[in-house]
Image (tube, rainbow, N blue to C red):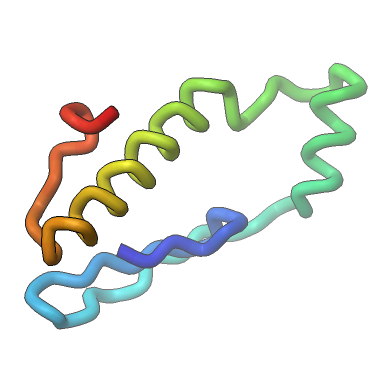
Length: 78
Protein backbone atom coordinates (compact mmCIF):
# COMPACT_ATOMS: atom_id res chain seq x y z
CA UNK A 1 0.00 0.00 0.00
CA UNK A 2 1.19 3.49 -0.81
CA UNK A 3 -0.37 6.48 0.92
CA UNK A 4 0.17 10.15 0.20
CA UNK A 5 1.58 11.87 3.30
CA UNK A 6 -1.22 14.45 3.21
CA UNK A 7 -4.03 11.99 2.53
CA UNK A 8 -4.61 13.04 -1.07
CA UNK A 9 -4.39 9.50 -2.49
CA UNK A 10 -3.78 5.86 -1.74
CA UNK A 11 -2.87 2.91 -3.90
CA UNK A 12 -3.13 -0.77 -3.00
CA UNK A 13 -0.79 -3.33 -4.57
CA UNK A 14 -1.75 -7.01 -4.79
CA UNK A 15 0.63 -9.72 -5.97
CA UNK A 16 3.05 -7.09 -7.24
CA UNK A 17 0.40 -5.33 -9.34
CA UNK A 18 -0.61 -1.76 -8.57
CA UNK A 19 -4.31 -1.10 -8.30
CA UNK A 20 -5.96 2.11 -9.39
CA UNK A 21 -4.81 5.14 -7.40
CA UNK A 22 -7.72 6.42 -5.32
CA UNK A 23 -7.69 10.19 -4.98
CA UNK A 24 -9.60 12.64 -2.90
CA UNK A 25 -9.94 16.35 -3.42
CA UNK A 26 -7.83 18.43 -1.05
CA UNK A 27 -9.91 21.38 0.03
CA UNK A 28 -7.46 22.99 2.43
CA UNK A 29 -3.78 22.85 3.19
CA UNK A 30 -2.72 21.18 6.44
CA UNK A 31 -1.78 24.60 7.85
CA UNK A 32 -5.22 26.04 7.02
CA UNK A 33 -6.89 23.07 8.70
CA UNK A 34 -4.67 23.37 11.78
CA UNK A 35 -5.44 27.06 12.14
CA UNK A 36 -9.19 26.48 11.75
CA UNK A 37 -9.16 23.73 14.40
CA UNK A 38 -7.04 25.82 16.75
CA UNK A 39 -9.38 28.80 16.43
CA UNK A 40 -12.46 26.64 17.00
CA UNK A 41 -13.85 27.18 13.49
CA UNK A 42 -13.94 23.45 12.80
CA UNK A 43 -13.72 20.13 14.61
CA UNK A 44 -10.45 18.24 14.41
CA UNK A 45 -10.70 16.04 11.29
CA UNK A 46 -7.81 13.92 12.56
CA UNK A 47 -8.48 12.87 16.15
CA UNK A 48 -6.00 10.87 18.21
CA UNK A 49 -7.71 7.62 17.18
CA UNK A 50 -6.46 8.20 13.62
CA UNK A 51 -2.91 8.48 14.93
CA UNK A 52 -3.28 5.25 16.89
CA UNK A 53 -4.57 3.42 13.80
CA UNK A 54 -1.67 4.76 11.74
CA UNK A 55 0.84 3.70 14.42
CA UNK A 56 -0.63 0.17 14.37
CA UNK A 57 -0.48 0.13 10.58
CA UNK A 58 3.16 1.24 10.64
CA UNK A 59 4.01 -1.45 13.24
CA UNK A 60 2.33 -4.05 11.00
CA UNK A 61 4.24 -2.81 7.95
CA UNK A 62 7.54 -3.18 9.81
CA UNK A 63 6.56 -6.62 11.15
CA UNK A 64 5.57 -7.75 7.65
CA UNK A 65 8.87 -6.51 6.21
CA UNK A 66 10.78 -8.35 8.95
CA UNK A 67 8.88 -11.54 8.02
CA UNK A 68 9.78 -11.33 4.30
CA UNK A 69 6.45 -9.75 3.36
CA UNK A 70 4.13 -12.14 5.20
CA UNK A 71 0.70 -10.61 5.90
CA UNK A 72 0.32 -9.16 9.40
CA UNK A 73 -2.89 -8.17 11.19
CA UNK A 74 -2.40 -4.61 12.54
CA UNK A 75 -4.65 -5.46 15.52
CA UNK A 76 -2.23 -8.21 16.57
CA UNK A 77 0.93 -6.08 16.52
CA UNK A 78 2.23 -3.97 19.38
